[in-house]
Image (cartoon, rainbow, N blue to C red; front, top):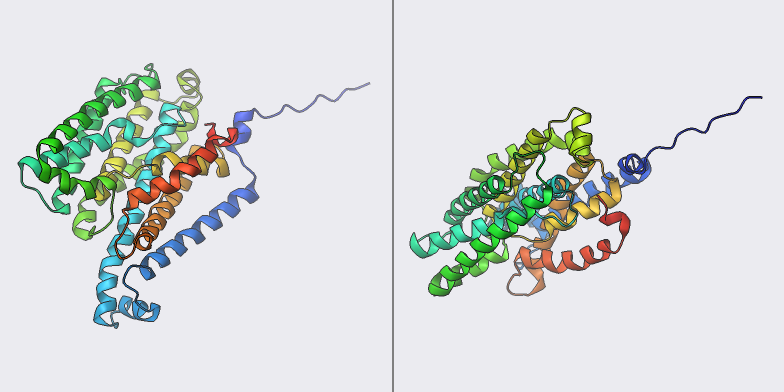
Length: 349
């Protein structure tokens, strides 16, 4: 009499890496449709009502002067929103995967705090007053702060606990935040000028602001794509990753370099925008599973949708003025994140 041995079941982690194809395919189509919709809305919606026909004519170079002015403002703003959203979404996914912490955020590397203190110094002591000047200072400050956290947090040590990097980032960020507060309290003009920037805004973010930062964002995205496969092994722990032939040290350094470039560049363009890097990966993991290749791709698209949609909402939320995009993402992100945190499946990495 022969007996049939039961087929081994795939581990739970492996099953989570492969979500149902129908759901993943539906999510891709929905995400692409949502991205197209928010881009169109970003071109059509604003405090200044302009007929859609005039907008399309202006895009072809044949519209009225008013429509052309609107296009000249909204197209660069939309492109900046797409770039910032993609960068923050991918940076958040990388941060959570590298630290194996579902509550990790790119700001934990000191990016926001470093950018803020650099902008405060530039306004108070260097006489910088334009967003273009903020961009260079914020980018430099973010890179220096993140590099400091990398060195002090033992990013190059494959045996260093991920929590060490997070604690180091919190400590460095607290010191830099104290410096920023001290500068703004002793220089009232600096405080007034930093209010708009620190809320996170896409207003007046034209090509002169986006183009210098774009190479950093492209390099960061390329690095993220290159380490996506290795992150699946790193998420299981350094011992398992070594057994699978993954260089944990190299992977961790490349991941942190990508986070620094992406989050630093996004902060330089739009200021510190919260909740995007924290919330977007949660939503994406809930839909596509924990395969980091899918999570990174999904976070890129979802980040674009969230930032551009929040910017559109901010334009019409408090007429005749505007609400900064960073404020809108906080209003949208907080309740969504609370709802997701109550679901075990969404909170797990």
